[in-house]
Length: 248
Image 1 (cartoon, rainbow, N blue to C red):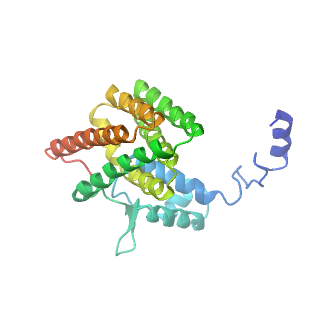
Image 2 (image 1 turned 180 degrees about the vertical axis):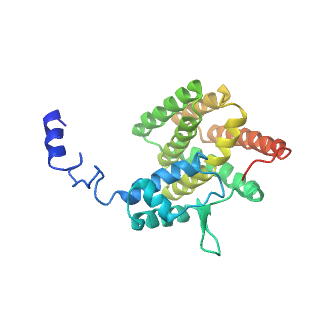
C-alpha cells in the first residue's frame, strides 16, 4: 500500500484492511481477539503462572476495554483448557496436571508419527517452502537462545508439517497438544538456560528430507525418535525437579 494511501486511511479512521477503527486505534470488534491472544501468550510463556487469578475488572482496566470482550476472551481460553472456573466462580490459570503427563506424552508421540507420515504421503511441492521457513526461524531462535521464539517456531514447524498431510483432524489435535505442552517446554528450556541442543535442529532437517523423499517408514522412525528424546528429557527434568518443587 502506498504511503499516501496509508495516510488517507489513518485520517479517515480506517485500519489497513479497510475496517473502521475504534478510538485508540483498535479495529472495531477486535477487542476479544486482542485480549484472547495477549492472555494466551502470557499463560503459555508462564508470564501468568499456573493458578494465577483472572479478574474481569482488572483485565478490563489492563486492556482499556469493557468487560464484555474480556468475558468472551475468557470463554475462548476456557475452551482451550488454559483457564479454569472454580466452584466459587473464581477463574484461575489452569494448573499443570503432572499426573496426566504420561497419557499426554503418549498422544503427543502418536501425533508426531501420524502427521509426519501423512506429510510424506500427501505433501505437495508448495508445502515445503513454508515448512522450511519455520525451520529457519527455529534454527535462528536456537542460535539466539530465544526460548519463546524456539517454542513458537517449533510449533509452527510441526503444524505446517501436519497441514502438508492434509488431514485437518490430525492438524487440529496436534496443534492443541503442542499448545498444551508449551508451558512444560518453557520450564524445561529454563533448566537448560535456554541453550537447546543442536540435535533438535538436525532432527528437523532429517524429517524434512524424509518427507521430500516420500519415505514414510523413515519419517515414522525419525518422528518416533524425535518425540521420544524430547519426552525422555522432559520426564528426566520433571523427576529431578521434584526434589525442588516448582509452583504449578
